[in-house]
Amino acid sequence: MKKLLFILFSLSLINFSVKGQSLTERLGYDKNDKLLIIHADDLGLSHGKNQATFKAMTGGVVNSASIMMTCPWVAEVGKMYESRPELDLGLHLTLTNEWFLYKWGTVSDQAAAGLENDQGYMHADCATVAIYATEEQVKMEITAQVEQALALGIRPTHLDSHMGCLFFGRPEYLRAYLQVAQAYGIPAMVEPQMVTEIIEANPEIFQEFDLDSYPVVDAVLTASPQDFEKGMTNYYTSVLNELNAGVNVLLIHVAYDDLEMQGITDGHRYWHAPWRQADFDFFTSPEARQLLEANDIKLVTWRQIGELL
Image (cartoon, rainbow, N blue to C red):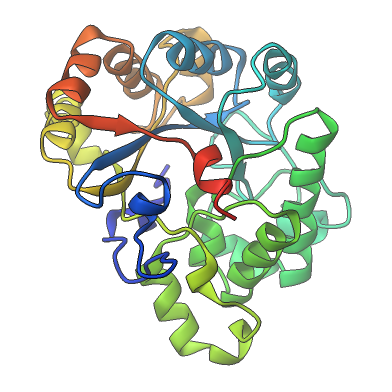
């Protein structure tokens, strides 16, 4: 589903610094320490997805996740959160629906005109969203998603963008994203190289922002289809063995390879049920924990980063 391709670039062009300190140092670590957020996308997508994610967070090494508020199973996330409010849960702000058989629409009725197709479902890709959705509609929708999370009793620890549509769409979408994050005091996960290119091309749109005030991580990593073909254990072992110093985010997709997820991802070659089962298996394994220890990797959360704001 071509999820978050923006993260394949290096996140090194914008540094969050206070009096010369790196983000790593601001978090209380040495600048040479290896810090990692192991982040599971798509919480709320399905019952099995929810169960697998919470199990990976409470029994495995996954320590962060983000919720798709457009999906039917978000109410279960709210219920599960009641007993584990300390968990690091953000919002996977969603403007698209990429699945063939599993559909959803907008949270905001007012935003539907630009974000939904003739069948009442969100468009399948970011390019189509950029054709039809205005900045105002996008801002209404992502605001509604934040408000829905708050209504469920969830205080999001961060924001990010499903499929990167807030980055790959119109430049005004990025402004809306940053405005919403700023209004609610929630860290926004951004890709510095992409953001820098957009701002340089559209300086008049971003005059209100000082991006140096945002806590920007050093690197975001995720598996590609090629990595999946070579084996997820090989990929994740390599990532952990070769992790650089700084604050890193590893995006994964945990779920069970069962009838529910097979039906949702039907017709997709990647980011499907087997992929998600492989992610779950690795990050709930003793080997994953051993690799973290062997490489002296310290786990941190978006909640800790948000406290710096």
